Image 1 (tube, helix red, strand yellow):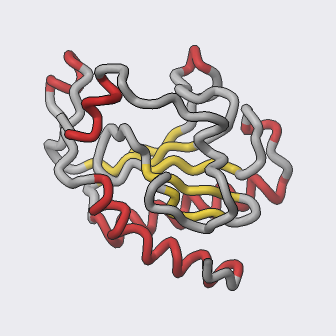
Image 2: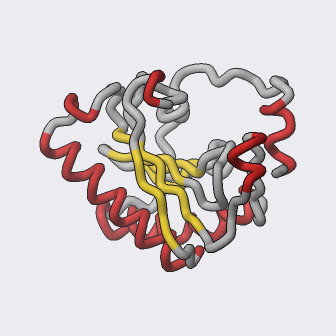
Length: 167
């Protein structure tokens, strides 16, 4: 099991105040909150309790629960970010495949149902076995902060290229 998950599994992690997808401040990135990217429309976080190394969460900055609430500009921007993040993961983590999805509502599996978000989960040949299915065990080969450090530079470049922002 990934060492940073232990407190979460034991129920010892502090509850997040506010919304996970609305980290405090205005910074475009923040190591402590695993914020890789934030602009006017989109936010990209590294999942703190991932299913796989490099598991990203991508959300609109506007707090909405359903994809049908996005306006055209937000929808275009969010889908473009899913595409950009997919390319970054392929280039910097070299997965054999990717799972990309969105759960709408807690019954559908959304852990945070009131803020729309997509998951991008890198996958490698043989990365999970029966333990994941039977025991909800997740094995992550790299520490979260190491993965954050690998992924931050391309997201910073993306932010600079798209907004001219150099936070």
